[in-house]
Image (tube, rainbow, N blue to C red; front, top):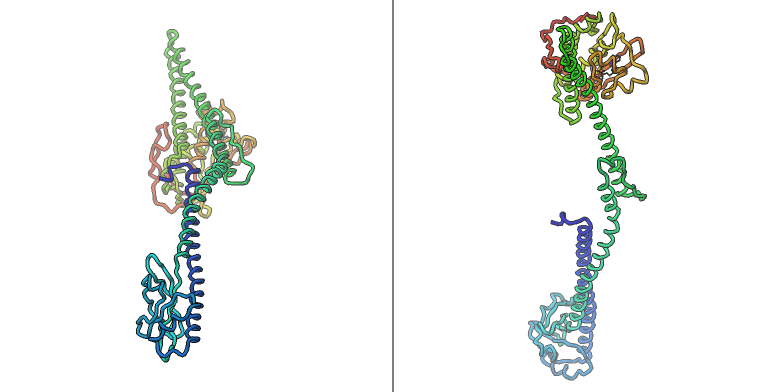
Length: 493
Ligand code: ADP
């Protein structure tokens, strides 16, 4: 219930509640301390009164028997003490007229001769505190009891309690109002943050909250919100850029398909001309579907889709992928060779995605290597990791381009990439797959000599089989999983 109210009201309520508890405790404690100190003073007084009764008795000696006491006491005129005397058996021998008037009952006598007992007695309308002590008179034991009326003491205690009952709520109300005002002041920067944050929307994402000068919680809140805005701004900018790039990339093939169709329909065309236009349309639609497939995969990556990781046999996956690309490599007279020791290596990854990553790296190596070159795949275990190196003797990548090659849609040479059927998304997809598998990817390259992409993946002790046949996406190709390749120290794939 309280949690639904504003922080300001909650703070004030907690403050007032703790004050009530604190001041209430203090009031109860001071009431009892005051009461105890009154009793202490009264008890001291009662001791003196017993002593004066004893003095009077000893001065009035000799007294023949305790029966003669009332007679003796009636002659005392200076003693201003309320007292009563009882015999050993508790029978009343003498009682001051005031005590008799209020029918004050005797209190239980002390057990030992020396001690004094104190007890509250008297009646409802005439409260009193009494003290009793044993004494000797005419060879007999008597009990002297003295009384002190407590009416005035009780009245002052009541007055004290009443003033506390008025003062404490008054204090709590005043302090509560002060607390409400103070918490309002303390929270006013929060309202400023709220106002500023409300003003930030997607069109004003570069705006930031004012950071208070004081090194307090509100400063850290503003800084945290600002750094969150930084991250959101980067993501939104990236999404905008990605959407713009994707539309641009899709517009290209769409325009080409439209142009080819319009060209074919404009007038009567020969069979050769129509075949050529159809081939263009087919090539561009294949490119478009590959682009869409890559975009969908990246959208999955961006939405944080969970990748199903399992144990994948890496050496077999590399052979299958190389086999898949053999024809393409053969068309450029490029040799794909494998350099691995034949041991079975397992890694933790998604089988389909792992093959897609291998395909991207080996296909790129073939794509960007001139005719008669070589592509070599090295595979080795290194402690808890497995290292895959895809090395080519291709065109290489300029040093200034190296930090950019994993960016989406980045291509060193757009025309060449397009001619090769590239979309500029391959390496960014490969990097995402490697990172999702808990690995790293890096590249070394020398322009004109070739490039080496190194992938490190965590090794696993699995027994699973490699990826299913649809690992290559829209190209619809299949691969042979029967383990056609025999492991050799150096093999031609
Ligand atoms: P693309 O579809 O254009 O191949 P990628 O993301 O796979 O897109 O690669 C991005 C760019 O990186 C390529 O356009 C090319 O310029 C460069 N690149 C990738 N692999 C190699 C390689 N093995 N040798 C030289 N350049 C490469």
